[in-house]
Image (cartoon, rainbow over all chains, first blue to last red; front, side, top):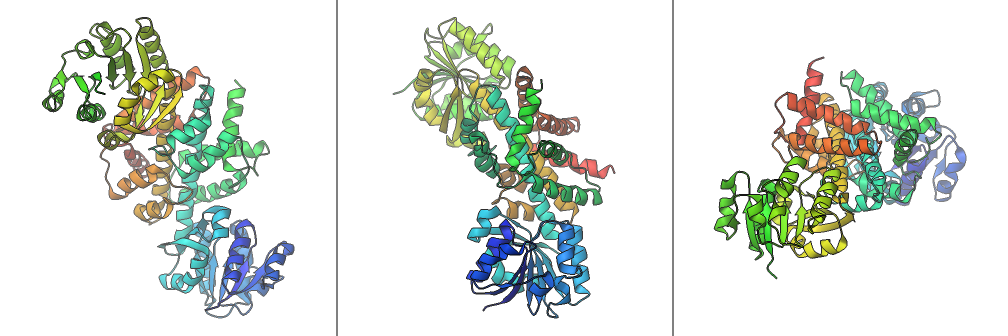
Length: 293
Length: 293
């Protein structure tokens, strides 16, 4: 059944996700800060909207996927936010990666207006967004998840109900810890190999199928071996996510020393102008550390 | 063609490996410090040997898999070592995990006696040893590897020539770095989840197929979720291996800060009497750190 959807945020992820919804036959209104990004979607039948409020107008579902916690609060709850125009009883689904606490707060603010809310961050990258193979990590009520399931099925292939509002963001935070520390292991291992005269490509191939193996070794270790530091997933974005991780950990009295060390490495990337490279550029930080000796 | 093999070291790994060679029809002489461990193999047709020297007597191939670098030097080169009795032109294959430097030194000492040497540490654990599905990481000459291939094929399914003598050990060291840091990520992520009220099992299931996924998350994360801290691979042994890693790194002027942090965590396991638990017991260290606050 075609649904009417307001879609806010047409970055790399959001653009492909909105396109999939349009191509699946849903009626989608699109908003993006840089309006020109909406044009290809308008050509496919989307209704262009000048504000989040305009995108939400008359729609039963609003999906947002923007960069950071303040962006989410602005597009949903701000002056031109979706909350002011959505139908009573609408469902808002935020698929950004933001703080669990912000997700809970947004959920409460929306509930006061009679609007349901799910946090539903995703993993699976630009390829997953294009191909509809994302993992979707959902926090919120089960009945709200069921209301969204038809749309989620267009966007992802693995939909996990993680718990109440905020729980999707918490599980996403866990994922970012894993990505950061798996990368640290890869960088340390490949440097040990390289300085010992062993090609990183050999190590990646030999160890990927075994107990040291990971998605990151397979996909990103092989990029390091080729000298390919293009993103995938940008250093600046994982740093944003690791700040979210640490804020959540701090609230819980949890000290994450490995994550802190990864942030320091990625921080050195940023100081060296490498924030827009892929996370595998952590390899360059260790390379420079060796060079200094 | 049946080969005559001296086999030194019948620990969890060595026992299963020797048994596979016997069952494949090779003539195997077995030595173990605790002699009783050889009995089931003798029942299968192995010749028992009271010393490494006796195990090597008249054999064209000698395989050793013992705990640490000094053990390898003793069983191969010591007073009762295999070097004193092996046929001229024999091939020694050390499958222990030891320092790359020790492997190179052993190779040189053996070359002086006309004996060829491969370092060939393995990954794949007790299950891989039983089922003949180990990954074998080989350092040494290619022709020596070809001499050993018939035996390697009985023991493993993936045989990688890593480079000259010592290179197998270096790649194994890389593997142990990956195992240690993947585990650190898992422990930090699962604690964030648990303290947030989300079951670790849910996180393992949701994130294993994605960009944060790893062998360790799948196999050991699920053990943590079940409260199962039995080894697998023991804390005491990964600590031995990480010392090898750091010694190798130090020789190369390489600082491995993530690995150092993992050693500190595992060190706290050892201080708490958890050295003989599996590496996933690192989770307990973080648990105690939270409890202290």
